[in-house]
Amino acid sequence: MLGLLLQNQGLDVHIYEKADRNVNRSRGGSLDIHHDTGQLPLAEAGLLDEFKALARFEGEDTKIVDKQGHIYFEEDAEGEGGRPEIDRGELCDLIQNKIEPERIHYGYKFESMDTLEDGKVKVHFHHSDNFNQIEQKETEVFDLVIGSDGAFSKVRPFLADTDIIYTGVSFIELSVPDVHTQYPDLAEYNKNGKMMGLGGDQLILGQLNGDGRIVVYVAYELDRDQLDEYKALDNEALKARILEEFQDWDEELLKYIKYADDNIMFRRIYRLPIGFEWQHQSNVTLIGDAAHLMSPFAGEGVNMALYDAYMLAHAIANHSNQTEQIDFDKALAEYEKNMYESSKERAKESQENLETFFREDAPEVMANFFIEGQKMLEAQNQQSNQ
Ligand SMILES: Cc1cc2nc3c(=O)[nH]c(=O)nc-3n(C[C@H](O)[C@H](O)[C@H](O)COP(=O)(O)OP(=O)(O)OC[C@H]3O[C@@H](n4cnc5c(N)ncnc54)[C@H](O)[C@@H]3O)c2cc1C
Image (cartoon, rainbow, N blue to C red):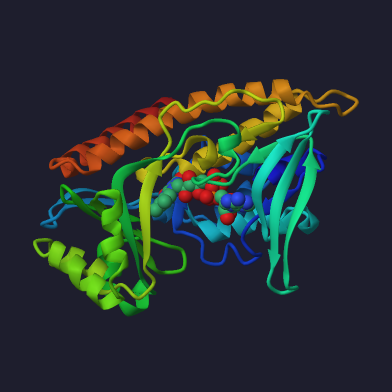
């Protein structure tokens, strides 16, 4: 997103991605993109209509149940809400297709960097390209380096000596394919959006994706190394173990596990310290998870990453003069101040939600949270109609 915004400002921007060009094909699940953060850069790039045409407004359906299957909250989305869903790969493709292809360099893994005497930055990459049988080290020199390399950022250590923290929660990600055709009972139960099964120290979270599959997160409070026990099992034994551990759960909820296919992923959930900041530099900064990794329990990570792109692109434009000289020092200082403020609030919320989700009374607490949200929205709508 940032690459596109900077390209549109006429800057000579280049994106280096360690994966190959098929990186979007099967990347992650569905994301709700918020009107007041994630959608702003899409609008700025003139992509809002295309985004809305692809987005699933009905994907805002929400259901909260306890492990016996009692429903605490159920809402069917109506009309055009402020947080429509889109599959991650579709969103990436939408943005990427607008970037001039020669600006994106696949198979380039950032390894390290040095600041040169003139203030420029020399970056060392490992370049691999299976098709052309290339495996080599390469270097490039830049005026500005923006680390947008995610949770396990390799750029972050050049700015701060701060490591990510394991939250004590791990996910086993399952996938139920083609639910409308193969499992209409589950499709009907789940509806078009999210189902949150909250059972104290265990959760089942289901989310319908645009391709007709339900992505399921079976979530546990686990010590970091305990996930390895699950990883060591073959798929059949893994499912049997999960079903045994969820044996006192309602039969409707167990279908999320029983119907799952063999696409299984294991995810430890990490975060950065809330309020993480680094020593400002004039030629390197961070955006997205590299800057403010937070757990997914508030659904804010992608939205904040997109919002960072918006804020940084604006800060750069604000500090460019007529002769196209950019004061990166001032631009980064402005961006970092705004980003620290907005991400700290969301990081706090994500951590509070994580703790709430695993409480014994989570179904009631989360249902109240959504009911209050509904009331606020109704009051806002009434006010704007007056
Ligand atoms: C299970 C789960 C569910 C989630 N659900 C949601 C949700 O519903 N809503 C939401 O808003 N957020 C969600 N998130 C959070 C969201 O995925 C992240 O916040 C978001 O992807 C961050 O974007 P990013 O671009 O900063 O990092 P990433 O998406 O991680 O992208 C980093 C990129 O950098 C590349 N890279 C990494 N290292 C290097 C290197 N050394 N050299 C070159 N390239 C490199 C990677 O290949 C990748 O393409 C979820 C996260 C998890 C784990």
